[in-house]
Image (cartoon, rainbow, N blue to C red; front, side, top):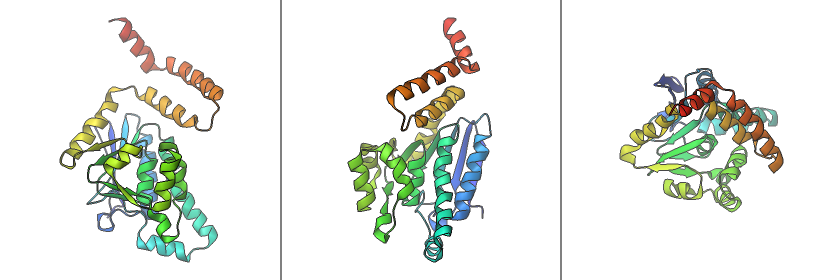
Amino acid sequence: MSEILFGVEDLIATITLNRPDKRNALSDALINSLKEALHKADKTDDVRAIVIKGAGTDFCSGADLSALQKIAESSIIENLDDANNLMELFALIRKVRVPVVAAVHGRALAGGAGLATACDIVLASKSARFGYPEVKIGFVPAMVMAILRRNVSEKRAFELVTRGAEIGAEEAERIGVINKVFDDEKFEEEVNAYISSFKKISRSAVTLTKRLLYQMDGMTFDAALNAGVDVNTIARMTEDCQNGIAKFLKK
């Protein structure tokens, strides 16, 4: 059985984690398949957004038992390579040109919560659960902290990663971990409606906006303004902007 399912329909690429019997737990094969699918979607010029979801009852439960066993038996160098593999996945999501949306149902725990947090937008069903429980086994949710710390306040981030407690979707939305919560019964319908908005927006403008937003991390105020000047100028020269201005002026 394939680790993931991939398809493109009506300008939207869908990547489905396909290990339902393992609650879509992360493995080397799954992480590598995810990276391949993201690269494939990114190279498809008419794709306007990418959705990552899970098959079965959960989005992703983190590392499976075999992955934990591998960690326990590996050398420092082997564990470094393993950690780098996950880091590359998180970084790739930000480098992909179009929005990457996590559609979370059931549980998103540990590496699964990390995967969701790494996405540009997180949509969740009302019954979904999120948690970073790594500290309970002496582990550290290390790479995801770079993203979580940018999403929520310092005190919220500290609480989430040191207590290891699960939170519900509505609490996750309230503190800024996720974007939207939808009723379980209408979750798929609401997700499709939300994502469809990207079909009506300039792809080049969204691509430039995503790149600039993440490039601003760590910039001084003046550097960020100057980066904005550069992107503003580039945007003016795109076909989408030229056509948009022409259409507006004809009204």
